[in-house]
Length: 527
Image (cartoon, rainbow, N blue to C red; front, side, top):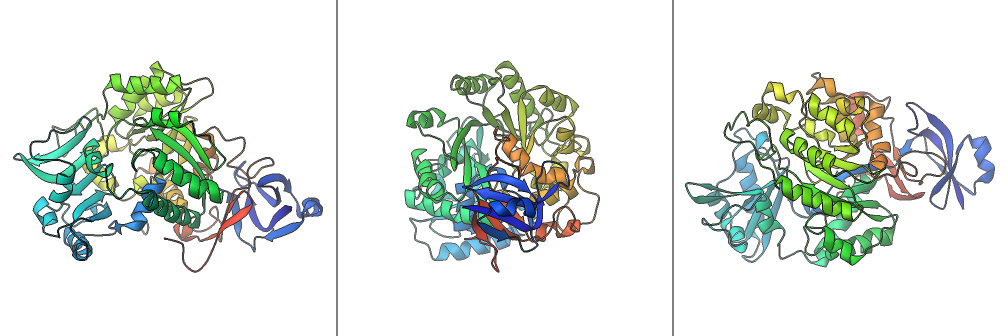
């Protein structure tokens, strides 16, 4: 059965402004594009767009799909504006929970508080008897009450693990765990059962589809028990339903274990690059810097691994013929991993992936352009904590914060993602942030306005860029003959609507392989 999609504006994303009148889809593929008169005789059904606007299917190039589902399951505190409000919300939840259960809050951002301070360990303990963890918005820092710390065997005598920090003041635990230290708790949560993982994944995919996403590049395989558990959840839900396309990065700690499972990629669940964390994040002062933090002059952040360890991991990936995707935020982290990549390059035609690339200078940009690397950016990172980052980094260094235009101007492949659950996985929010570089409702010229990009370039991050970064630019990311019939249909035109209306455009349809998997109702799906 061949379906003709027509009756609205259809952007191909081949070139800026290029549209076609109709698209003919059969068996999940685009078999032709052109005029209605030319294609109608070949169609058996017509899908009328009702004046809506169709683009190639949007793909989030970096998120944690199951982790985002967890945010939908637990307490979302991302909009909390004070420590007192945070404690009140969590305390109310703790009241109805037994001592053996776990309470999890996700999205704390103290920089949005009038007084940007964390709750103390004694304040957390006073909330109730259950185990409690609060994940900061960056997910590189958590707060844990004494019961959760005891669960992981963390005491005042516990040393910080390599690549992490168990924070203490005057030898006493504060409840703050940073980077690899937080894995002592979060990677061993007792409720990570197959049923829990599947529920989180199901909620996540439904929500992502409601934002117009047809797929995502995710890193989930090392956080929910053995990697076979999340893999089986993806098989059971994503593979079986064929309504979302997932590209899975493989954390270095489970890379060989996954290889031994001999899992085969499908069009809906693909296995991709090895994932390595090189440093932490600005929020916890753990992003690795060449010069110290301005507000903490003895602190340069942390490199999670030594150079020798990074070389070992990269060489392991190369032995399997695999590329490497790295989390690198600070300039020292970026510089360090680029040197390793230069020494141990991927196979001809392959691209490694630099995720976040949050702080650069001209030398880093030049080195990036000289290596076989694509860059995975999160445009929304320019919102929210930008002013706090200036305090941490100073005005001069901040000129290199969250680049976009500089990367594109050097001819680099750049994709766009949200890093959900850290940011809301709405690609329209990312597009607005890339074009305006300011928070919603503001009217200034933007944070680092020299890095603004055009609307076409911004949409390209989530379409062509997300395909190019995984070597699928020949079959995804454009509305073109031979490509997958994955479409995102909005009720307004991103390219012509007033810029302040971009975040408020609604999804009309999300289409995977020619099949509508989400259709607009009164409320966007959040569960």
